Amino acid sequence: MFDSLTEKLEATFKKLRGLGTLTESNIQDALKDIRRALLEADVNYKVVRDFIADIQGDAVGAATVRSVDPSQQIVKVVHDKLVKLLGDKTADVYVSEHPPSVIMLCGLQGSGKTTLAAKLGLHYKKKNKKPLLVAADPYRPAAIKQLQTLGKQVDIAVFEKGQARPQDICREAFDFASKNFVDLVILDTAGRLHIDDELMTELADIKALLKPQEILLVADAMTGQDAVNVARQFHERLNITGVALSKMDGDARGGAALSIRAVTGCPIKLVGTGEKLTDLEPFHPDRMASRILGMGDIVSLVEKAQEAVDVEDAEKLEKKLRKQQFTLEDFYDQMQQIKKMGPLESLLEMIPGVGKAMKGMTFDPNALKRVEAMILSMTLEERRNPQIINGSRRRRIAQGSGTSVQDINRMLKQFEQMKKMLKNVHKMRFKGLPKDLMPF
Image (cartoon, rainbow, N blue to C red; front, side):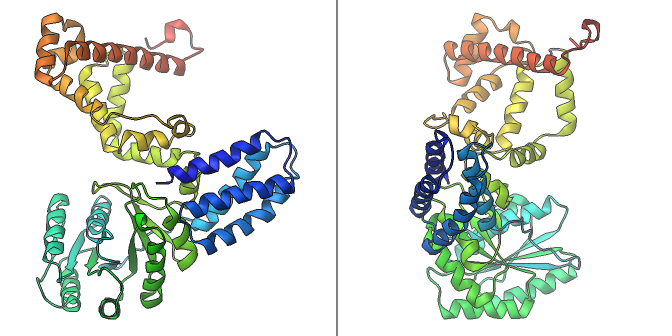
């Protein structure tokens, strides 16, 4: 989402790298570029004005530090101020120790409330909580059906009462949850194409009735300044406790994410990062600031890996690598784990420096699918012993996978190169040991 903003900020910092020292004059030039980049990213102009003023004093003070590269000084200042703008600390969704807790999702129609309700339910189900999804939007039959479909996908119960009053639906859902040992009640409330008194009165009634621990505004990050205006109005009427940004994987300019926290004073607590129901992350201001500045996000990458990789399987794989027994079967399993972590482009962008090096590069989304098809077209013996794959076997595999013999040759060659690379990586871990103690 922040690609354009990141590119412009990096260009600004690059200009400063050629300077020997920072002066008030070149700092002002840099601040003008930063201001322009933020405004073009659709950040609220008042937020930009205050942000630049906040940077200015610290940037001028940083100019006195002679031993540090000028661009690094400015990057440090901008990073710190971005973290402050985005909320300083991670704000967790509050779940009461005395169940059932109630999380009320509100927002305009089409903002992604229903999908986020299912994502949130799955998130807490993984934490051994028992959630209940409540279809509190009786005006759109499709909304009820959608929530039921999503609930079935993640095996979470959905409470619905058809066309009953939303207030009655929510009250009955809470009573049901209290009697059935539910830990978390997630209310998928109705939305409108615009804010009106009828909608707000209805939501205020539900708030007064259930006294939810969290009232989260679901805001479409791709709507720019409209999302900021909507957040302000919902906060004035409902006193929301936080914001969940949906569609953060889109190609919008990202101004909403940088403006909502400053305009409403409410923390951003969750971000939807993709279409899969697993694509939900807590919002970390420091990590988001690092991503915006092109500094990567190794911590999030490690967390994704920990979720996707089974520790026992990883230990087995390490033993195989040490004994040089890595097979195409193992390679296929590793591809499946990488796919669980999300799109390859997103993962690479989290590695410092890699996102910048990838500028202009394109990824073939079908490349992994072709490799999978090739491996799945092999027999079990061929996957475990690729060296037996002769000419006739290659022709059969190519025909079965819808590829060519040349594709099979290329894939097998790349697999052998990868095996050598993995062998070298593991040898480096034992560098300096006597030869008789080397594991291979």
